Image 1 (cartoon, helix red, strand yellow):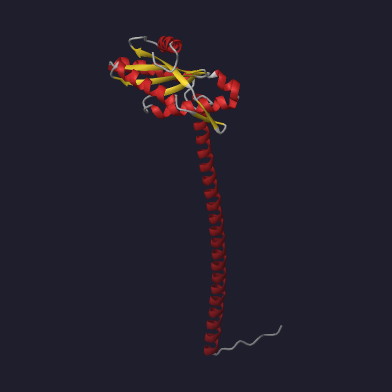
Image 2 (cartoon, one colour):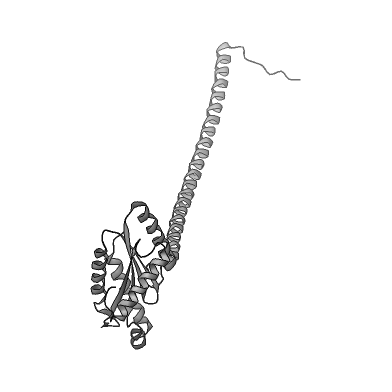
Length: 241
């Protein structure tokens, strides 16, 4: 077996040991740089994933907000459709009965009166016969618009059926207030109606019922106002009874 001579020069030994330490440090630093590079790459990937997750979350929130807004709009539309007459967009019969019932309860507690108007268009059938049902529908829509524009926020108007309307006039002070308002309505409803590029003329007969004088339930008030309206119609129409 061959023996390899080992230098006993202390400077050489010291230099060799120092070189070995430097090599080890260089190796450690290389490992550290690799580890840092790996950590940076991992952090960068995490940031990319976080940004992607944020984009997905933001998109999901936007979609959820849009769905919520759409659902609320649909619910509002469904609520409106369930409460209103499809043609005239006034309250339907059932909702109007509820409003009259509520008005009775409120007027009873607060000891005031209100008026219920039964409005019927005079000679409306010839409009459908001569101009068609589309023209009749257009006239009814204009009637409802005029009635709606004439009332306060606390009042209500509904299509009772055909060319008949109910108008709830809340919290009036005197009988004369209801009569004066109804007379103005007759004038408003007698203005020409535009249909198919032309115009037609209509009039309205209006019957008035007062709470509590003429009834203490929705149906009794409607019946009284209906009877009063027929008296106005039999007297020639275009007037208040």
